[in-house]
Amino acid sequence: MNLLVSTLDSLWQVVLVGLVLGAGLPTVFALGMRSAALGDDGTGTVDPGRRALGRIGAVICFVIVVVAIIAGILLLTADFLSSSVGIQLF
Image (cartoon, rainbow, N blue to C red; front, side):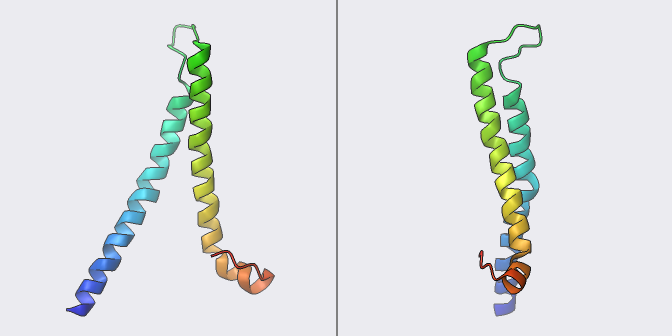
């Protein structure tokens, strides 16, 4: 019974991380793309206030995605970095 509880505990953690990284990061990226287009209504008129707000939102979304990607790469290479260079990240 202890093995089943331990397996189910690990399973929900894997599913949660998979949802956050597998669906969450592309969603944040898509939100950044949508935000970058804010202020342009498709007819050629641009609202400068909404355009600036959209660019700020897009930059925030893209920074979140880039930081998550860099953190993932560093997490995967943590053992290599600690053994070869001596850098302890996590």
